[in-house]
Amino acid sequence: MTPEIQALQNIAATNYWSALAPELVLGGVALALLVVELLLPKRALALVVPRVAICGIVAALAWTLHDWSAFWLGRELFGGLVRQTTDSQIMRAFFLVASLLVSFIATVVLPRQKVPRVEFFHVLLVATGALMLLAQSNHFVLLFVALETVTVAFYILVSYFRASPLSLEAGLKYLVMGSLSSALLLFGIVLLYGVAGNPLLAGHTAQSMNFTALGEFLRHNPDQPLALVGAALVLSGIAFKIGAVPFQIWVPDVYQGAPTPVTAFLAVSSKAAGFALLLILVRGPFLALGQLTLPLLSVFAALSLFFGNLAALPQRNVKRLMGLSGVSHAGFLLIGVVAAIAPQDAVSWAPAAVYFYLFTYLLGAMAVFGVMAHLAGDDDADQDLRHYAGLARKSPLLSAVLACGLGSLAGIPPLAGFIGKLLIFVAAFHAHLWVLLAVAIVAVVISIYYYFGWMRAAFYEDASPAESRVYVGKIHLGVAASLTLVALALATVLLGAYQGPFGQWIATR
Image (cartoon, rainbow, N blue to C red):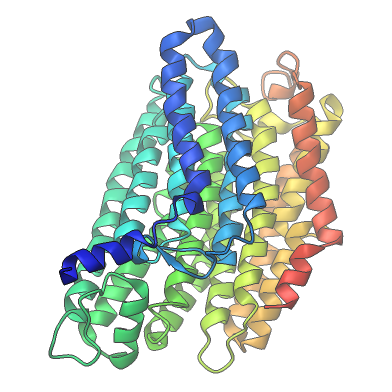
């Protein structure tokens, strides 16, 4: 038997397709939606398609939770392309829950527009599967393919409302900026691949696209200039995905122009994927490059906290406000990442704090976007603070959910967002990140102003019927919508009061 055949057999022995069953379920359901479109009349599609998509996501989520302790955890699969860990399993569940909530928001928003339903949910399922693969990446080939699949899906979804000039403009801006970030990322990968394969350097390897092999090379050559440049370019490409300064310029325009469910998808899932990938890299192959990653990410964090909060202060459009506040949240999360890799005082449970913060952000942001979806008019991009005047009198349920979501995002006790920020602050304290801790505290104070300004509009301001959408017709809340919004609000309150398995998991890190 030749060495080549033996190598192929060794790779085939690691191909456990059942390990990717949730992703395969999503892919199968996405293809099934295209078949459903051919078989069913157009009138039935509006009812059937969302239900089929939601059932597919629920099935994938059930499989993920059932398979939590699979025997391949911690092993490299598919020839080193995939590596499943407890962290990756948590993020797989995260993306499925987020997509489930995005589907709910889509069922509220899409009926107001004359746009295809099947294609929206098809792209949503494909993007969700790619996000799940991204969280399991152990190889730059899988990382780039999965990341570009997600990015191309967002190119489509951001400009999905073809009749809206702002949606088309947002799609074009995202295309240009996304292409630039992909070029930075790919250039960095090429530099790392080339320098790690140089036979004149210690620890060189022909498998330099593999994170384990690359990490071993960088451990031997932590000061290699080309390796440092390559890693910096890769981190810059990821910084675009999380909306961190100085790669945040696209955020407000794209968030405003994109359909509300897509804005929610961008705000939650795209940001979470970026941080999952960032933690994989800085705690894996880039672990030896602390002299680069620590100052670079620290600067990104401080600038994101200042810019996001200061830029959000004068905003009246709530979609732009959510986008710029998301830049600030990226800064908080970056502090957790920096605490995890601090050279002398690394906090072992800091990555768990980052994941917990992402879950609190998921609950708070989706609650807010759910309310926004019910108050948005035919022009989805035009969502102003004045449209919320009088909301508490017209719809106590929506105003209460809005208060829970915004309060959690602001970090007000006893809501979940307060615990998320507290864990980040404690991690920064233990890692002796005094400057970042001070900046974060100031950022929290600033953010309270614009979050409470939104709540003030809903609870205390009054407006004429011409200014407030609350008085334009009735706010229709179905049973499913009411239950979903109440569940998000209750989860935000309960997770703030009792962390349960999350607290135990963080304590054991």
